[in-house]
Every structure is written in structure tokens, then in C-alpha cells.
Image (cartoon, rainbow, N blue to C red; front, side, top):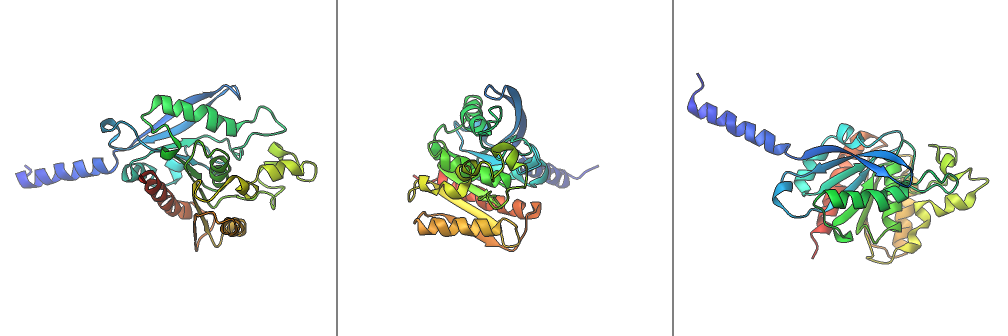
Length: 273
């Protein structure tokens, strides 16, 4: 028979363990009228969701070759981070190779439209969200890092804060990679499509302090050079931002660490008066 103190300890331990993983992870299905198909997303709500009226939302984008479940299956601690920073985290499906833009050569490929005009209104109508840019952020890894800054900078009316982890923030040096030319056409034939749809060429849309921006890339990453170039251009334009660089490559080990800094940065933004 268990002694009373030992039994009480077990109950306390059980409560602590359950509290540590109290965030709720849902898989939802949304409909894209633009692309005429169902698209899934993971939605993580924090442990205090039932007790509060509204929460900030971070849209967390996956990389090339993955899907909506990547962050919860490989990210390590997504649910814990929702609790820690008291945010709703939304992980939409960006197809394995969408790059999160609307294709100028395939009118059925509209992932920019899906995220900004279909998914966000759906999330805002089904969850207790802060329905304002001051309570909405976006970031992602690799292809999703491109998406985080691409969508964030182009839609500053929707996102007050935007980030990127190991992002492909300049796609032009990689004209034959990751099926980008299937969405934009070849760089040789359609250079204007590539120039218009790369993050590096969107900085004219920013003014100092118009948006909070955080960029993170490991020094061993094949995207490191384009991230440093982006950082330098932001400095030249006097655009405040955080730029994090440390040893590491294009790996989940790196992103499991990086996402902590991204979500903390966004929490600090959300908490500003």
C-alpha cells in the first residue's frame, strides 16, 4: 500500500507533467476557394486558452518537402512554446514546394492568397485571436523562412512582426533548385518573375520601425551568404532588425533551437504597449 506522503507526491508529479504539456494540438481542414481544394493546418492553443479572451497568433511555416505537421513532429517543443509564450501557433500546409507565393504562370497556384486572404480570416473566426497586426506574426524555416519574410513584408497590414530561420531570402542564386522554376518559369525566360518574388527585392516596402523583423541563419548553412546580404541591405536602409548568426547548418537541430528565439522575439513585440 502506498504511504500518504508518497501518494501525494505521485499526484503532484502527475499534475506537473500534465501541466507541462497542457497545450492543445488540433489538425484542422480549411477550404481554399481560390485553389478549389481542402488544405490542412495544425493549430496549437496554449494551456490558458479557456481562461482568456484573445491571444496573439504566430503563423509558423514549414520548409521544402514537408507539410503542415512538420513543426509538431520534428520541431521538438512546439506545444511547450505555445504555453511558454502564451501564443496560438498555426502551421499551415504550404505544399511541398509552394514557396508561399502566387504563381504568375499557374493561376491555380495561389499560396500567398491562401495564407493572407483565406487562412487568416478562418483562424480569426474559429479561435480567440487578436484580430490585428499588433497581435499577429509570421516566420518559418528554409522555404518557410522565405515565406515568413515574403508574406510579412508584403502584408504589413496583417503582420506586425516577421521572421526567418535559415530562409531562402534570395532565390535568384538557385535557379534550378527546389522546383521554383515550376512556379515562376525559368530564370532565363522570366527574370522579372524571379526579381519580383524574392525577399531581397522587397526591402523598398519597409520603412524604419514599420515592422519588427528577426532573421536567424547558421554560418554553415548554404543560405548563409544570402542572409548576410539581406542583413547588410537592411542596415544600409536603416531598418532596425535582429540578426542572429551562430554555428550550425540546415538542420532540425538548428531550427529546434532557433524557434525559441523567434517566438520570444514575437512575444516581446506583442507585449509592447
